[in-house]
Each structure stands twice: as C-alpha cells, then as structure tokens.
Amino acid sequence: MEPREALDGLISERGETYASISRLLGRNSAYIQQFIKRGSPARLDQSDIALLALHFDVPVEMLGGKEGPTVGQRSIVKVPLLNGTGNDSRSQWRLVDAAWLGRLCDQPASVAILPIVGEAMEPTLCNGDEVMISRVRFQERVREGLYAIRGSSEIFVRRIAIDPTKSRLTVLTDHPAYPSWQGIQRKGVDIVGRVIWIGARVA
Image (cartoon, rainbow, N blue to C red; front, side):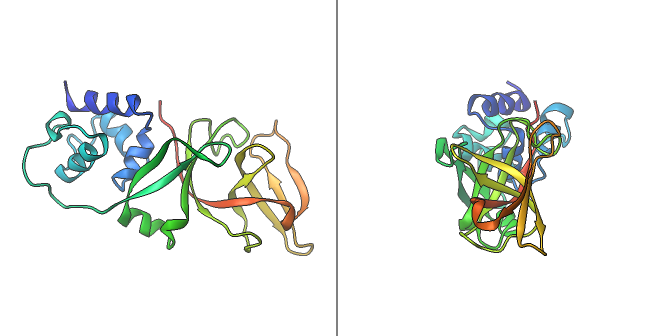
C-alpha cells in the first residue's frame, strides 16, 4: 500500500483528523491534508515518519520510512481531549509535539482540546473542527476573543466582547441564526478556557 493511502486509512480508522496529525508533527493544520491530497511535500521527513509510526503503532516502512535510527528525536506530550460535556472522551488523549506546544502556550499543563459540534460559530468554526484551549481560573481576567464556555449540559465555544464601562460581557455567536447574550456579569459566565489554536477538519 502506498504511504499516503496507508496514512489516510490510519487517520480515518483511529478517529483522527488531518489537523490533529499535523499538530502532532508541529506543523500547520493543513500540512497532512496537503501531503495526502496534493502530494506536497513529495515525502515526509524521516523524523516525522518515526513519530507517526510511534503514534499509530505501525512499522515505519508502512509510512514510507526506513528501518534504523530515527532522525531528530522529539519530545511528545499528552493533551486531554474533551467531549461536549467537558469530560474525557473515549479517545482520552492526543499526542502533541512538546516544542510546538511550548511556542503556543507558556502553561502546557493547562491545555485541552475540544471538538466543535454544531453551526453556531460558522464560518469561523465548523462542525468537526477542533480547538485547543488554555484553561482559565474562576474569576480570572478575560479579554476579547474566543472562549470555551460551560453551559447547563455542554461546553461550547463563543466569542466574548467586553464592555469596560459596565464591567460586563457580551457572548456572541458568529452565525446570525443563533442568539447572542448581551450585558452579562463576568460571574454569570462559566468560562472554561481561552481558544489558542484552531484546527479545521478537512474531509
């Protein structure tokens, strides 16, 4: 089996996404999609292949690698994967390149990954996308941007705007068909974390 076809099959079988595997390699979110669908790059680095083989627990030869010492050893960390209720999902962890995560966030232990469900944040976020969040402590100061918010039965992502004159928040959806909430006190919004990375799901 050709390495691109083998990798594409592994991603589908394991419930991964092109974006999540690109993130594992410390690459931009479209890197693996471009490799599989467009043939660019022509081949993966041996160090990338070794990391993918470790992640999927398959021989390096299956992904076009060569038997022997790996090149450019990397440090890998586990990032918890949350479901819509904020609990660990069936796939409890995603492996992420430690150096890439360190560039993204100065507190890697506070990070989690949340899949996007629904259309309320389209076109910014679509159903099946993933976001990485840095957890926010209760009553920690927030600034304008995208945040994961805990509702009555689920966690969802919304855009937060701040009214500094009244010390209140506006919780916004990006899709006009879904409601927004104006003038809410900070203590009335259960903020789980700030979005620090977006991974688009590519079919």
